[in-house]
Length: 297
Figure (tube, one colour):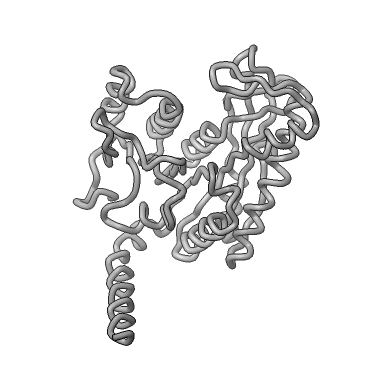
């Protein structure tokens, strides 16, 4: 009985690999920007699983870029240092003292954890921030928010250079100011969308803590057009924290990204399911019809 079960498992594995072949071919050489954050960042097993997926993507010819957040770690350090953190319309007010902590945690602690996890999984990763080679140059997003930046200039040649060397870039969303070379904190989703648009990426994957965009009945909608997304925002179907995510996805698609996907980063192998299976994962937003019949073309 045990042997029969093992044989069925092997056959299922072989069938899965065979079915993935068109997608492995389809994404060879493609650029995929992955925004990594949420609960998975604080869980060692989830981090290791994510790193393995990213390494596998690179091994089959995909050029992944990981952009990460780190809000919980920033909060923890600010509390330890006795620095009060305030929020306006859901965004952190970032003064001089706070932005120094943000840069320390994002460019240091969090970035290097992800780099190490990818290296431990057999990949070659290099950690960067948006300040390196002036990759992301910002202007203030809102005077009330202090050093919170809105990307206005992108220089992604360093990422292309790393692709050519077989290296996986891991980018912390800390940027340079255009006016006086200040340091700016950038929302991780915003940074990922801006980088994806500048690279004209094939996919932007926004990993979050929910399965995707839900309709009025609470069901996850697997495919959406920009017009459908705007209508769902207008009628209140999309609300709260999902609004900035879909707005990031829309901006990326309108900026030249082939498709953006909002998916559950807590699900095992979420990125692989999205890229290399017919059914994909989460909610895909794109402005054009798929070139082939399967949902993920």
